[in-house]
View 1 (tube, rainbow, N blue to C red):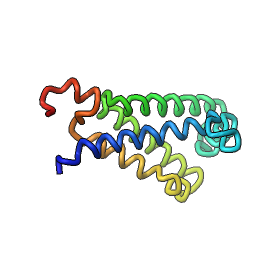
View 2 (view 1 turned 135 degrees about the horizontal axis):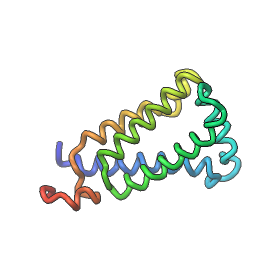
View 3 (view 1 turned 180 degrees about the vertical axis):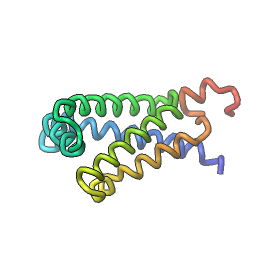
View 4 (view 1 turned 135 degrees about the vertical axis):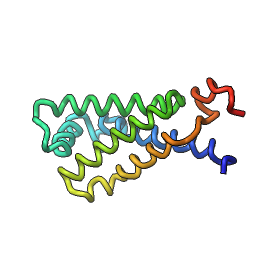
Length: 142
């Protein structure tokens, strides 16, 4: 099984990073204005967090976006993978719970947020991958 484990960890890191960056690209209008923009994302954040006071919705949008960018970049370079994976799992768990509460279970299921959360948890359990900054700092990797 170890034969494919490094490749699987690398691909999982890249897929998670692309997933985060694509979501950010939509809300910043990089996929074209017809696909999304910042004001639409802030409005969606308010819908997803229907239980939160309106005054903190812009802050939630900024924090979520900042964490997604940070986690994506760290996953791509492979730095502090275990901690980033746990942070990603927590972030996506919070997304999934908020979506389920505010929009119903189909919303989180349709966006595969539960799968993202589980994938991040799985990544956190993996040994250090040789194709990462973490792996370059570990002498036991061959």
